[in-house]
Length: 438
Image (cartoon, rainbow, N blue to C red; front, side):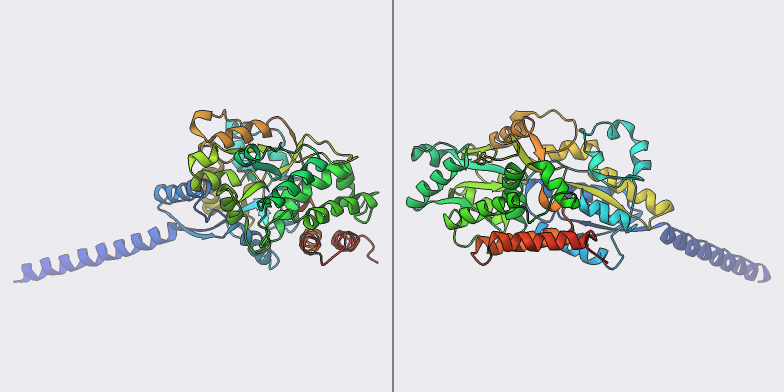
């Protein structure tokens, strides 16, 4: 009897100790779980978004010790949402950011951390980027973004079938463009499809390139810094006047400020307009939603030359585009996991998959043209044959870019004059960089 009691007591001790160990093991496992937040703008159904969503899901599967909270925004809303939290001194652990003024402002605010250790960990990846790609995300103390693409913003897409059916030539000068607009307008065909609901597209895709052809790149770079050039200079007002000329010629469809760029691209692919001025991002949306026969009818070229323009006409406005950034507060195992996520979304494999999804990349990868649409192959060759010039909102301050976006919207609607818009941009940019402050 006493022996039986001893066995029972021993079993009780074993169960208690085992349970205690299991509880500690469970607590240790919970402690090893790393929580990360990821923000991106790949929320659509286009091939690029599908690819990036797949990469994120693969990361989740392969890293079950990481609890990843993802917020996916539409491209139109992403920048404003990120700016709003950054103004409160907060950013996600890993997120998409733009090169240029956004990288500079977040680095100066010490909200992002250089990713040089990650680049040094994978030297072949680091050395595989095209010239000026990493430099686009570089500030004085390091590289703050892993480039994810190459983004020309001002491609003139045209419907070859409509041009051929109506005996028109693709315009190479501003005079020819206005003639083509007048011709298609008279036929009841929208000359240029536009989707400026979010205001940025008219600036990024049309005006950035038009203005560079008029003013030249050097003038714009000096105006941004307010060093010997002002946005009230006659040459900038002249550039704005060409936007008003497009509006007065009724170049765009009536609801151009009520639809976004995605609907614009689909309606253009549906044959509802002769032309569309848009970025390289349109290719992945078209590839996912337009029939092959429609894609075969599309052509792409640069915007026309401008009368007496100071800028190089054989150019496209464009930027390296977006990159993956690291929130500054990450350290230790959490930083390691965040770096791993950045590499998963921008490393060599991600770059290859991105190119295959009809998105241009700033990485040295040969293109197998048999695997992509004819229009993507055409744009690929076009981008590699021209020089990129600045996109206005990539270098302007947030205040300056907002003033220009709103001003262009009012200018196109006939609610503002070029001189008025120019003054607003000048005041906003000068104020943002502290010019004229006491």
